[in-house]
Image (tube, rainbow, N blue to C red; front, side, top):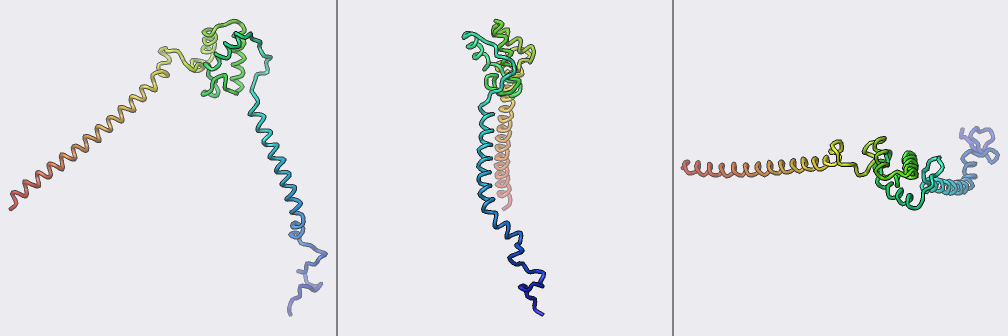
Length: 194
Protein backbone atom coordinates (compact mmCIF):
# COMPACT_ATOMS: atom_id res chain seq x y z
CA UNK A 1 0.00 0.00 0.00
CA UNK A 2 1.45 3.38 -0.99
CA UNK A 3 2.28 5.73 1.82
CA UNK A 4 0.53 9.06 1.75
CA UNK A 5 2.41 11.78 3.61
CA UNK A 6 -0.58 14.14 3.61
CA UNK A 7 -2.79 11.87 5.68
CA UNK A 8 -3.14 12.57 9.40
CA UNK A 9 -2.22 9.00 10.32
CA UNK A 10 1.24 9.34 8.81
CA UNK A 11 3.96 9.84 11.47
CA UNK A 12 6.17 11.82 9.01
CA UNK A 13 3.68 14.54 8.38
CA UNK A 14 4.87 18.06 9.00
CA UNK A 15 2.08 20.49 8.56
CA UNK A 16 1.82 24.20 9.20
CA UNK A 17 0.96 23.61 12.86
CA UNK A 18 4.24 21.77 13.50
CA UNK A 19 7.19 23.76 12.06
CA UNK A 20 10.65 22.21 11.82
CA UNK A 21 13.55 23.66 13.78
CA UNK A 22 15.23 24.50 10.46
CA UNK A 23 12.26 26.59 9.46
CA UNK A 24 12.44 28.50 12.76
CA UNK A 25 16.16 29.15 12.32
CA UNK A 26 15.56 30.44 8.81
CA UNK A 27 13.04 32.90 10.21
CA UNK A 28 15.34 34.44 12.82
CA UNK A 29 18.70 34.32 10.99
CA UNK A 30 18.25 37.73 9.27
CA UNK A 31 17.59 39.35 12.66
CA UNK A 32 20.55 37.48 14.15
CA UNK A 33 22.76 38.52 11.24
CA UNK A 34 21.95 42.18 11.84
CA UNK A 35 22.66 41.74 15.53
CA UNK A 36 26.00 40.05 14.87
CA UNK A 37 27.09 42.90 12.60
CA UNK A 38 26.32 45.44 15.33
CA UNK A 39 27.92 43.24 17.98
CA UNK A 40 30.99 42.65 15.80
CA UNK A 41 31.39 46.38 15.15
CA UNK A 42 31.04 47.12 18.88
CA UNK A 43 33.63 44.46 19.75
CA UNK A 44 36.01 45.81 17.11
CA UNK A 45 35.72 49.36 18.48
CA UNK A 46 36.20 48.09 22.06
CA UNK A 47 39.24 46.03 21.09
CA UNK A 48 40.89 48.89 19.22
CA UNK A 49 40.21 51.24 22.12
CA UNK A 50 41.73 48.84 24.62
CA UNK A 51 44.77 48.32 22.41
CA UNK A 52 45.29 52.05 21.97
CA UNK A 53 45.47 52.91 25.68
CA UNK A 54 48.37 50.65 26.68
CA UNK A 55 50.33 51.81 23.63
CA UNK A 56 50.04 55.42 24.78
CA UNK A 57 50.53 54.76 28.49
CA UNK A 58 53.89 55.06 30.18
CA UNK A 59 54.87 52.82 33.02
CA UNK A 60 55.82 54.83 36.04
CA UNK A 61 56.41 54.01 39.66
CA UNK A 62 53.90 54.59 42.41
CA UNK A 63 56.33 56.99 44.06
CA UNK A 64 55.69 60.69 43.90
CA UNK A 65 57.87 62.41 41.27
CA UNK A 66 61.11 63.95 42.44
CA UNK A 67 61.35 67.59 41.31
CA UNK A 68 64.50 68.64 39.48
CA UNK A 69 65.63 72.06 38.30
CA UNK A 70 66.24 72.72 34.58
CA UNK A 71 69.96 71.90 34.73
CA UNK A 72 69.33 68.64 36.62
CA UNK A 73 66.49 67.72 34.26
CA UNK A 74 68.80 68.21 31.24
CA UNK A 75 71.48 66.09 32.96
CA UNK A 76 68.84 63.41 33.71
CA UNK A 77 67.71 63.29 30.06
CA UNK A 78 71.33 63.10 28.83
CA UNK A 79 72.23 60.31 31.27
CA UNK A 80 69.29 57.95 30.68
CA UNK A 81 70.24 56.96 27.10
CA UNK A 82 73.65 55.82 28.41
CA UNK A 83 72.07 53.32 30.82
CA UNK A 84 70.67 49.96 29.73
CA UNK A 85 67.37 48.49 30.85
CA UNK A 86 68.15 45.25 32.67
CA UNK A 87 64.90 43.62 31.54
CA UNK A 88 64.76 44.66 27.88
CA UNK A 89 68.55 44.47 27.33
CA UNK A 90 68.39 46.29 23.98
CA UNK A 91 66.70 49.45 25.18
CA UNK A 92 68.00 52.32 27.21
CA UNK A 93 66.32 53.42 30.41
CA UNK A 94 64.87 56.35 28.48
CA UNK A 95 63.12 54.05 25.96
CA UNK A 96 62.09 51.12 28.14
CA UNK A 97 58.56 50.71 29.48
CA UNK A 98 59.42 47.87 31.88
CA UNK A 99 58.50 48.41 35.56
CA UNK A 100 62.12 47.82 36.61
CA UNK A 101 63.23 50.56 34.20
CA UNK A 102 60.70 52.91 35.80
CA UNK A 103 62.16 52.08 39.23
CA UNK A 104 65.69 52.68 37.95
CA UNK A 105 64.65 56.01 36.42
CA UNK A 106 63.19 57.00 39.80
CA UNK A 107 66.41 55.94 41.51
CA UNK A 108 68.57 57.92 39.06
CA UNK A 109 66.30 60.93 39.49
CA UNK A 110 66.74 60.69 43.27
CA UNK A 111 70.52 60.46 42.97
CA UNK A 112 70.58 63.54 40.73
CA UNK A 113 68.38 65.41 43.19
CA UNK A 114 70.91 64.56 45.94
CA UNK A 115 73.61 66.25 43.83
CA UNK A 116 75.58 63.21 42.66
CA UNK A 117 77.54 63.51 39.42
CA UNK A 118 77.61 61.13 36.44
CA UNK A 119 80.56 59.07 37.71
CA UNK A 120 78.96 58.58 41.14
CA UNK A 121 75.62 57.54 39.63
CA UNK A 122 77.26 55.07 37.22
CA UNK A 123 79.39 53.64 40.03
CA UNK A 124 76.30 53.21 42.20
CA UNK A 125 74.45 51.40 39.40
CA UNK A 126 77.41 49.18 38.40
CA UNK A 127 78.03 48.24 42.03
CA UNK A 128 74.42 47.06 42.26
CA UNK A 129 73.81 45.65 38.75
CA UNK A 130 77.25 45.14 37.16
CA UNK A 131 78.79 46.66 34.05
CA UNK A 132 75.89 45.38 31.94
CA UNK A 133 73.80 48.38 33.03
CA UNK A 134 76.12 50.65 31.02
CA UNK A 135 75.83 50.83 27.24
CA UNK A 136 79.56 51.60 27.09
CA UNK A 137 81.24 49.46 29.75
CA UNK A 138 84.73 50.57 30.90
CA UNK A 139 87.81 49.01 29.30
CA UNK A 140 89.05 46.83 32.15
CA UNK A 141 90.34 43.26 32.36
CA UNK A 142 86.93 42.01 33.47
CA UNK A 143 85.29 43.53 30.35
CA UNK A 144 87.89 42.54 27.75
CA UNK A 145 85.59 39.80 26.48
CA UNK A 146 82.88 42.41 25.83
CA UNK A 147 85.25 44.72 24.01
CA UNK A 148 87.49 42.30 22.09
CA UNK A 149 85.35 39.15 21.87
CA UNK A 150 83.53 40.15 18.67
CA UNK A 151 86.82 41.02 16.92
CA UNK A 152 88.41 37.73 18.00
CA UNK A 153 85.41 35.79 16.70
CA UNK A 154 85.55 37.75 13.43
CA UNK A 155 89.27 36.94 13.07
CA UNK A 156 88.68 33.24 13.73
CA UNK A 157 85.87 33.20 11.16
CA UNK A 158 88.00 34.95 8.53
CA UNK A 159 90.88 32.57 9.26
CA UNK A 160 88.57 29.60 8.69
CA UNK A 161 87.36 31.08 5.39
CA UNK A 162 90.94 31.67 4.17
CA UNK A 163 92.02 28.17 5.24
CA UNK A 164 89.08 26.65 3.38
CA UNK A 165 89.83 28.74 0.28
CA UNK A 166 93.52 27.77 0.36
CA UNK A 167 92.69 24.09 0.84
CA UNK A 168 90.18 24.06 -2.04
CA UNK A 169 92.64 25.97 -4.28
CA UNK A 170 95.49 23.55 -3.52
CA UNK A 171 93.17 20.58 -4.04
CA UNK A 172 92.13 21.88 -7.47
CA UNK A 173 95.76 22.53 -8.52
CA UNK A 174 96.75 19.04 -7.31
CA UNK A 175 93.99 17.45 -9.35
CA UNK A 176 95.18 19.43 -12.40
CA UNK A 177 98.73 18.06 -11.89
CA UNK A 178 97.35 14.55 -11.72
CA UNK A 179 95.53 15.08 -15.01
CA UNK A 180 98.72 16.43 -16.60
CA UNK A 181 100.72 13.50 -15.26
CA UNK A 182 98.13 11.05 -16.55
CA UNK A 183 98.26 12.70 -19.98
CA UNK A 184 102.06 12.44 -20.03
CA UNK A 185 101.86 8.82 -18.90
CA UNK A 186 99.33 8.04 -21.61
CA UNK A 187 101.60 9.65 -24.23
CA UNK A 188 104.56 7.58 -23.10
CA UNK A 189 102.51 4.39 -23.15
CA UNK A 190 101.14 5.17 -26.61
CA UNK A 191 104.67 5.67 -27.98
CA UNK A 192 105.83 2.31 -26.69
CA UNK A 193 102.71 0.41 -27.79
CA UNK A 194 103.23 0.28 -31.63
